[in-house]
Image (tube, rainbow, N blue to C red; front, side, top):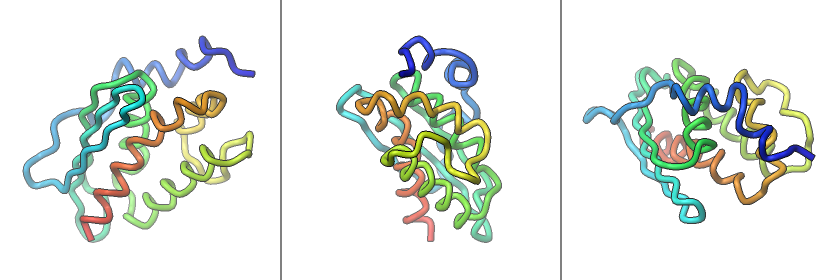
Length: 143
């Protein structure tokens, strides 16, 4: 079993302390705001799409280290990708965090596997998936 202290080190803490793509969404971006009432996480995501590609992505979050790190990692891996690729990654993350598999799914890019230890704490799963929930909402509206 993963200990709680193992959650709070390495790549995850790097993304928490120095989040990538953090900032207020631009007025020209498609946005979504999501909230996790269990731990108080609040995340706003803004995306600029061009030719079915994520051209720019920013997030602003107030919440736990897992939520902020996951938002940072998500924006880092989907930036520049086609919408379909981003939605495939969203599906992989949701399947991984809701399934029994112990290993990250094939095709899951770095640094996302660093979120794996959170799977041992079901009450924290939504902290990881909140940014992905926002991404789904934005991409559904951006079509």
